[in-house]
Length: 104
Image 1: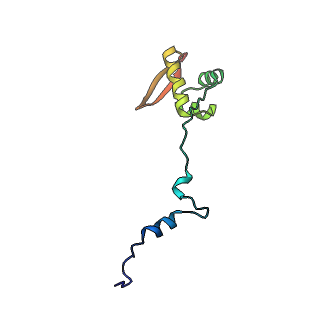
Image 2 (image 1 turned 45 degrees about the horizontal axis):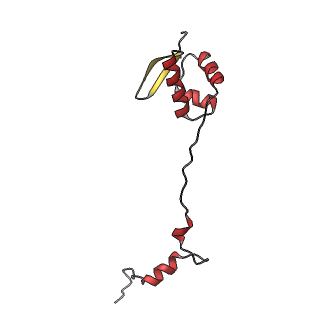
Image 3 (image 1 turned 30 degrees about the vertical axis):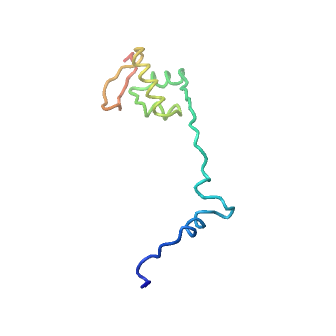
């Protein structure tokens, strides 16, 4: 009854052959269990403080770009500096805040 319009259902053994590679192993078995690594990136505190003091305003994105760290690391440093009183928050919204050095 094949009229060329539909697809033929392949047998189970044909499907298994298609899933196996040249070496006879299943393609699905190639991926091993993924291991999560804990990555710790620190920011050079002296360099970051110097950048903050020499800027009129600073954002987490600016600090991350200038110190070559992730934005989350730069943001954590700015929040820590805010709690210590070395910077003040002057604007921004929804996690995208603008800071100035406390001396201004």
